[in-house]
Length: 205
Image 1 (cartoon, rainbow, N blue to C red):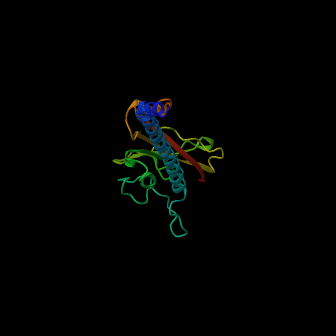
Image 2 (cartoon, rainbow, N blue to C red):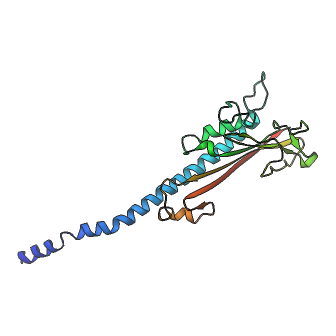
Image 3 (spheres, rainbow, N blue to C red):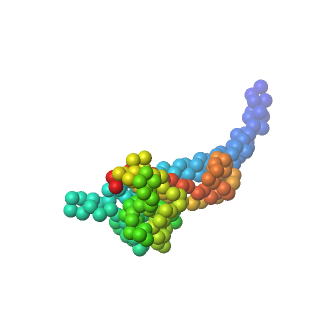
């Protein structure tokens, strides 16, 4: 009887190893999908926070009783203009993203003067802040911008400031099989995701 048990144990000795080898590819695939999904949410949270912080800064800036000037959208060099809204947005994204200066930042604020020297477009209830779109290479001329910001419900006494950030990134681990949950989202395609996040807050005009 002991001999029969011994023979059975010898026959099943490699069974656990074979089962582990069969399941291992599936476990690795699940792990890498979870890793890519976690990075996706990290970028989303970081972009949302960056847009919110930059919008608050566009309204308040470094205002004090001695200096009430609002910050510029990006200046001549958004990556080095320390007091600009775009520079702050890039700094907020640094650390969580591979290339934060690759983002496009649209800043809608009355500090952006158009050709006629006004910080807003339209009049009365249709008044909207002028927008500048900034990248690491510079900013566009102030104007309506795209997307067009909303008008404040209590315009012209109030005006909405808005920061709109667009960022395209590649997932950490490339390959369709490692990005199955992300392929189901409309913003991701073949391991590349295009995020858009914005925040808007009202300020007295």
